[in-house]
Length: 138
Image 1 (spheres, rainbow, N blue to C red):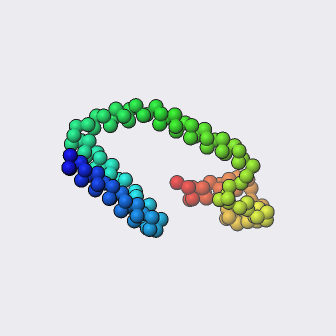
Image 2 (cartoon, rainbow, N blue to C red; image 1 turned 90 degrees about the vertical axis):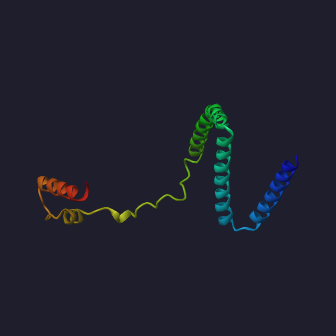
Image 3 (tube, rainbow, N blue to C red; image 1 turned 60 degrees about the horizontal axis):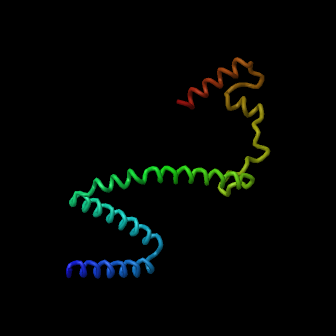
């Protein structure tokens, strides 16, 4: 009985101390610490389940939750599709700017890139293109 009381008081004191620290910590450090604490709790919980022989119960819970998780993932995909359809007319802020209108390649530039003189035959153009493709693509 006394051991349980001490453990409960220690847990309450630990939670109080953690919340006090978390409210004063910078957001980036608080996030990293929270992730580390969650990972430590998962490892300690897993060790406790293995030590007490109750790991099978964890697998049973996971098997029972798997259909619900599957449904939630499908619902999330459906929700994202609806959001995309609703905002279809809006351009995302990270979209690349369209190229300037004067960016079209002139025939002289094309001949220069292919390494040909203006007025080359279609066969020479095809061969120069194949040569460039072999050189630039695996």
